[in-house]
Structures are given as structure tokens and as C-alpha cells.
Length: 254
Image (cartoon, rainbow, N blue to C red; front, side):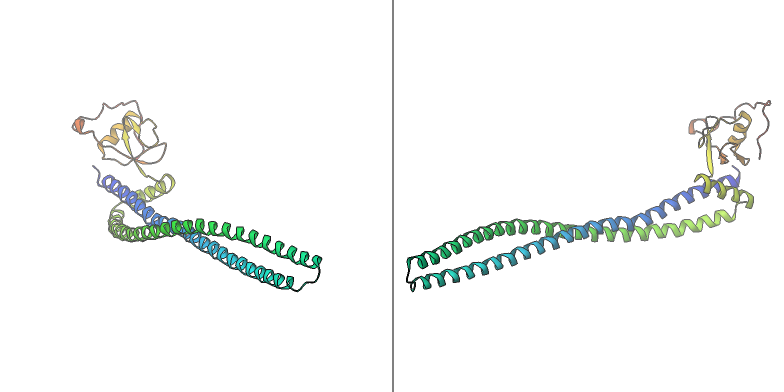
């Protein structure tokens, strides 16, 4: 195999692995951010549940104060009823007592409803706190894993970038520029010739071109996609001779 072809194959493999590792390094912080966002939502649920419970308790205390105020009024009206001189005055005071007692019953019902709400919200708070605890442990685990994988990826990237630089330094300038141009345009700059076709764009190769590619001794470029072609012999037919040349075809462009 032509040394430049072998170097280009190794360079493309290195570029692919570098891109994969770079994508992985970039994705890890996003994954952690997603978990942190979920954690923030759960934390907000906990705070909302606490705020609701606190509001219910404040409302209950206010209602209890209202009951005390009404009870004081009832006591006052009963004391006054002992000093009234007419039946109408007594009835008016008893009417006020009855009205105050009715208000107390209404308020007591509200307090009972509030107590049920508090019980329900305390269950929600307990569930949210349990979820928050589990998610906090999960995110710490994810962060530790992200730091470990990032360190490993960065170490591999350093090695691969060094290998990549060495390979690029050993490839002819014009060929390297063609590689870079096609890589930027199509994301791969080399393609295997297989079954008389460019495996990347699936365009059929002329028999002479395909035979030349199979020798791996020439730089041959696909006329369709501009990728640099190479050939990998199947294991069972690795020693088979090239296909017969078709002399009626024009020679491949170098």
C-alpha cells in the first residue's frame, strides 16, 4: 500500500475518534445540566410544599384567633343578658350569641379542612424531599462520572492529537489540503472502493479505475464525491489477482 494512503486512512480514523471524544466531552456538561435542571424543579416543589404548609398554618392561627374573638363576644353578650330589662333586649342579645356560634362552627369547619390540606401537603413535602435526596445523590454520582470520563477523554485526545499531528506532517501538502477540503465538506475524506463502487456515494467506478484502486499504489479520487479511494481485500480473497483490465476505458485521473 502507498504510504500516503495508509497515513490518510490512519488520519481519518484519528479524526473520527477525536470528533467522537470531543462530542462526548461537550455532551457530558449538558447531561449534568439536564439533571441539575430536574433537581432545581424538585427543589422548587419542596419549597412550594413548605410555603403552602406555612400558609395553611398561618391561616389556621388566624381562624383560631377569630374563634377566640367570637367566644369573647358570646361571653360579653351572655353577661349583658343578665342585666337587660326587656324581653326584646334579651332576644337581641341571644340572636347575636346564636350568630356568633354559627360563625364559630363555620370557622371550625374551615380549620378542619385546613388540617386535611396540611396533612396532604405534608405527604407531598415528604415525597418531594425523598425525591430531592435521591436526585441529589444521583447528580453527585453523575458529576463524578462526568469528571472521570472527561479526564479519560482529554487524555485520549492529547494522545490522538499528537498522533494526528505526526500523520499530517508526513503527508504531501497538496494531498493533505485535498483531504482537509473534502473532510470539511463531507465529514469523511476517504472511502473504500467495494463491489466496483465508491462505498460513500455509491457511484460505479470504471473497471480500470477500480483495478487501479485495488492496488492501493496510486492516489485515486472519486469523480463523483471527490473522496480519496482505497481498497480492503476480503480475507478469503485477499490473495486474488485484480480483475482484468478494460483497455477501452480511459485511465483514471491522478
